[in-house]
Image (cartoon, rainbow over all chains, first blue to last red; front, top):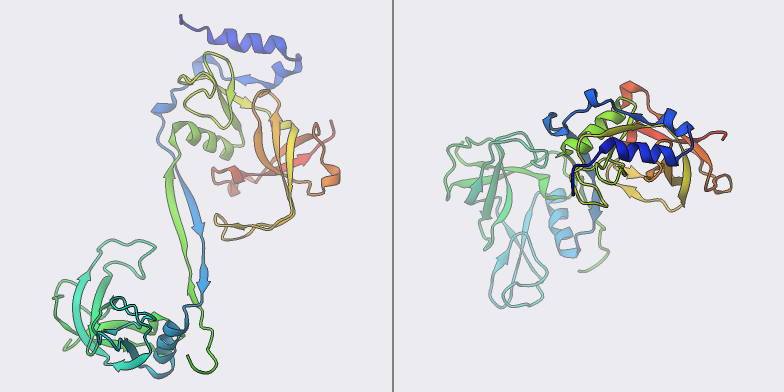
Amino acid sequence: MGPVDRDQGAKSMAQKKPSHYNDLVHVIEPSKRFNVLSLEPYVAEGRLAVPYRYFPGPVATRFFVELRDNKRIMGIRCPECSTVYVPPEGTCGRCFRRLEEWVEVGREGTLESFTVPRYSLPIHPGPAPVAYALVRLDGADTGFLHLLGEADTKGLRIGMRVEAVFGEERVGNILDIRYFRPQGS
Amino acid sequence: MEGDQELLEIVIPLDLKYKWSAGPHLGTFLLGLKAGKILANRCPSCGRLQLPPTPVCGRCHIAMGQEWVELGHRGTVVSYSFVAEPMYDAGIGDMRQVPYTIAAVVLDGGPDVAFFHRLEESDPQRVRVGMRVEAVFKPPEEREASMEDILHFRTVEP
């Protein structure tokens, strides 16, 4: 294709249309045409608000009710392999047996692992640094994810002893335990 | 489980804000809306307008070049949908207000492209293909360089 006469396209279109279109089409003068690629990139903001609520099932409900009403942490034991799940499950992940034997586990445990993001994001439960912790409570065979509080985030060690700190006001979810605090701190 | 089960509810309050790069063409269009202008760009080969503007002509598949056109705020309804079913809108974090009408409007000066937006008129008896409408912009201080800078299209006498 040879060079294209851009104005020819505009003129021919104007010829086909009623005359009042000429008053309405403001073709930007050649001297004012601009190269869009030289402009500052424009960053737009969006929002994705999708709150939801769900019923967690009878087993998780009992776990949360015990946290809320009695500040007790409950696990569930498999009759076949004796694994104690905390938080409790409905079915043993190894044996596929229905779980029914509830046991109370302690409020103290061991720090199995941790992660400390040092940048703030809206999805984090608080400003940086946030210490996520994998805690295995005394009497449990599984660890679960929670937060560390009142802790020196640069002095954390796998195997540290931690204890649960409950909130004064509890509603029946995992944050009824506000965080785990390193013992001896 | 024995006895009456309490129906506990876990609430996940997910409300995420994000940023996205609009690119030079869409960015220019959005900033044009903030300035109260409706901008389109024109293909250097076939002369066709793209609204909203794009980097490449949808028909010729060549780069659009630098020719921009400011379209009029008045236009003609060529198609519409009347929406009565309420729908959750994650962009506003709430249910959309119903009923509402969305329409394809051919703006004066842009005869081969349609602009999609809401109509002010929500009574289906009073909406006709071919009716004349005019864009109603929000006051300048309320505009945020988005499609919502245009509140809706109101019906005008032909």
